[in-house]
Length: 417
Image 1 (cartoon, rainbow, N blue to C red):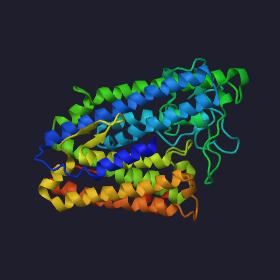
Image 2 (image 1 turned 30 degrees about the horizontal axis):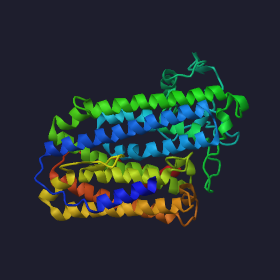
Image 3 (image 1 turned 90 degrees about the horizontal axis):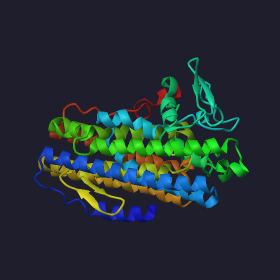
Image 4 (image 1 turned 30 degrees about the vertical axis):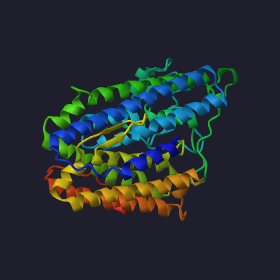
């Protein structure tokens, strides 16, 4: 599935540079919002498919139904990761995003973990284990967790203000489906047995509650994505925020591109793990799907710049773009930035190719591993494209763009302090 998506998408974006047209900021931002809406609609549809796969797993826990649920989760990540280019500059998205894609997480809050891997001395809830405990104590208050519901998970998410206390979203579901990845920087993802969901042959204890947690988390993901679709539909806050004032909207759009490209992806998601040689810093750490998450984050950046998104069903949403806006003022810079993004996609594609051939992303993070050069190459291209994003911002007069930084890139010694 991913390979066919890659080939069709690559073919599309390699021949989609003829987008130049007279474009007003208002037209560009309407198309920007349309692409956001389409991306969240696709994410919602595939989350609903994931929910159906979870129902099948719970009804008949077999290796086949567990694999099908995992495959549905992997498919659901493809459109969602492309929506991350709408973060950072858009306040409605930034306020919402932590519910669905927060990471890394102290998974012991959710379920059992290895005795020597999972506890966090700085987080008193890192081994609270909601699945095993029908009663929890938070700030001296007893919480009834006898029934695991979406509301309970919402109440426990980032409990006591600790960001690692993630109980909702894609990565909570990922942990439940795969379990902990205990391989470090060796090859191998989580190995949760299907019997963890089988009350008749239960391993890991509390199989009925584990299934209830998985179902509640998936239902909550659907609810949150429905909110995201509404946010970008006609009359939604996200759409109104970017279209009400075209100048402000352009600032939001460029802020999202630069911040995802530099501080978030090149820095926190890639360089930090490489500096620390720490697989806990990989984005999809339980499933070893990080190579795909990085790729589709990069593609989302390019989608926004070119004003073109290929939907899951193969249809295309496209129109006036930031590329057009830049090209009207400086065609060379517009094309240089597009070329930067193309080279970034090739570099991210090289990581995917290596992972699909058997060298997982966490291996690439190992000290001295040759795969680290692939990660470093992609980082360098992300940084390079950010420099031209900054030039484009100055060119179009988008005052107020503040691109998020990262100690991993700006002050590497600080990450070891």
